[in-house]
Picture 1 (cartoon, rainbow, N blue to C red):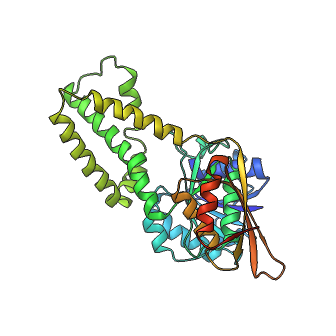
Picture 2: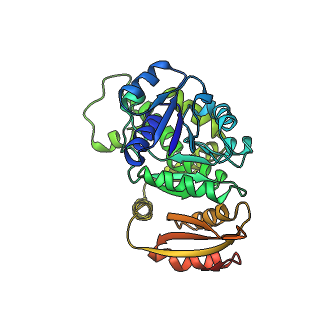
Picture 3: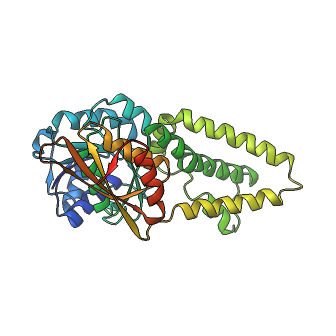
Length: 345
């Protein structure tokens, strides 16, 4: 397999390291900063540092890992350089604007839920994605073979791929990632104001845990806030309303506290992976987007595809998609697939 990574910082560099170590892939790397390329070469993350994308030949998967504000331009560059069989993806934290701007069937958006407080190729790790959810945002017309290849690639890097619509992705990220960063910044500001600029006294773990991400990578997070302003703004409005409600009931919040505990437990339980799998073999017509439609439908139902494979018939009129899902989700998955008028092999 031949991979090209555009942007060899923390995420792109980690993709490169994992691809070389786990897939024995040949990795070409590009970065606007020549020093990052040298670091990637020194660390054995890339086989070839390139100055022009035309130097990367025979690439199966292009991974664009540049800053959020540059993703559209860099994805378009990758698409222009990619061969007809290649798939182009990205690792950006916002998806709606990018997916709607780049109308090309060879592009399938992605976002690994992995990172660190440190940045740069020097801090990249080949195990960064182990067990991490990696969102994929196929279009309705995304080719099944390209989606399958990307799904297998992400799995091989150690991550758990999950299909999600680009609108839903940004709403979810606003709630579970972008808003927590905003609130961490607010909490730090509140503490600083309360202390009048004095040194922080000894604090418990709750303050440290709640503010761990405060001030993280200012250039990156400023871009993320701007790119997802609509969904993030809605979440901030909802928080403001919730805080007003809490303020009015400060004398009687035991039930509210218990509800938060119960909801957190349910959210964490839903985040668990592993356990026995069931195989579903679905006969699909040779029609653009049918595999992406299945993946997105299962994703919306909270059913993750642990693995998948696509085998076309000899005449290419139909194909068989094998899907592996959690055993407990198998009946719901069968019902959803059957509801689309598709038969099982």
